[in-house]
Amino acid sequence: MSTHKVSVIGSGNWGSVTAKIAAQNAIEHPDLFDQHVRMWVHEEQVNGKNLSEIINTEHENVKYLPGIKLPENLVAVTDIVEAAKGSDLLVFNVPHQFLVRLCKQLAEHIDELKKAAAPHPLRAISCIKGLDIKPEDRQVDIPCRLVCQHLSIPCGVLSGANLAPEIANEKFSETTIAYDEMDDKFNVEEKIQNDVALRLWKKLFHRPYFHVQTIYDTVGASLAGALKNVVALASGYVDGMNWGDNAKAAIMRRGLLEMVHFANVYFPDETSPETFMKESCGVADLITSCAGGRNHRVGKEFIIRKFINNDPSVTIEQVEADLLNGQSAQGVLTAREVYELVALGKRLSNFPLFVATYEIAFSNRDVKTLPLLLDSSPRGSL
Ligand SMILES: NC(=O)c1ccc[n+]([C@@H]2O[C@H](COP(=O)([O-])OP(=O)(O)OC[C@H]3O[C@@H](n4cnc5c(N)ncnc54)[C@H](O)[C@@H]3O)[C@@H](O)[C@H]2O)c1
Ligand SMILES: O=P(O)(O)OC[C@H](O)CO
Image (cartoon, rainbow, N blue to C red):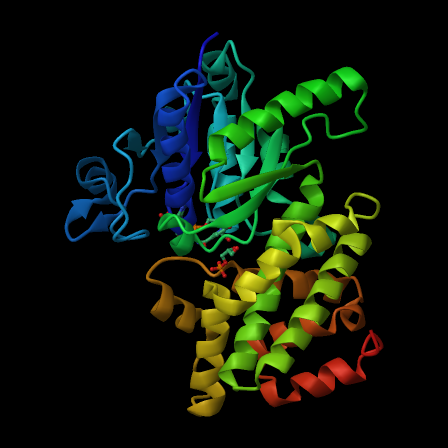
């Protein structure tokens, strides 16, 4: 039986960590996986050198994951088609704003990519926490479905309470893999086939320090991962104001309710509430992100500069750029996208926390009005 070959599309903070995990497991399971894992790098210059060359010679992503040794069987490739060709397992891990363009590049070569993956079918998984929103069409989609649509291949989701720097240092955490190859109700044979694929993904990612649980609910896993980034921004606001832990718990509770409500409104009957309440990709991810992720840091620093240090000119994008050195806090973009979607759909009053988070970041709303906004909305009694 020929082995499975893996390519990770993306080499940011989390992209590099998932590539490290896959490369470690490729070595651990030589019967299952090809020994080389490739990682597509969006090329850039770091101290006068190509980042891809630094990764391939020093085995460290000095820009996006400094201080972490990457396995030597992980190879950086800058041409996306070359990076994917010959692999049957594609791991998409880029900030969501870049996904469609990359899918289109791959779609131009999809027949040769499928041929080169043989004898295995080409499969994908998305580690992306974001949404594809077209407010003017009142449409919202999830990253794994974009991959399915553009490439005509199945695509699942890996998402969990996964702050990349902790996992890079091999500290214990859990994650959720959601995979539903049939994208519909299973008959018994299809279920077996889907579960074979699920087990394969689990083998690729499960580590002693990174425990994988598997589910079928790709929609719930995607929505929870994207929307918790907005709640994490708001929890940063709370810490910026030094309002304390009770206030933060209130934000998390309200946030979770709005996440589930969003799923019910825009993806009716397509998600399970259990995904939000029981899985790592649900409430656990919300908690860790509100405690210490990049979105939380950006939200907190924005509030300190604007309201504590009284700098009315500060923008949240500027804070993101100042703090993250090229990394992306996806909640900044998602807060805007979600706001535009619910505003055009005349649903603002259904999402008071999402709306307040957006208005504080982008519309000059005073952060001190946040409790009042929550209290006075029709959903305030929730
Ligand atoms: N970092 C985390 O802790 C973490 C954990 C779980 C999930 N995620 C999610 O994983 C996804 C990827 O995040 P990340 O942390 O790997 O990335 P990141 O925030 O470190 O983003 C930077 C990456 O974007 C690339 N990039 C910049 N401009 C580009 C362009 N024009 N086209 C293509 N790529 C470009 C950079 O080269 C770099 O690889 C996101 O959806 C994020 O929410 C992140
Ligand atoms: O650092 P953040 O805010 O992008 O969050 C990272 C992960 O999504 C946490 O699970």
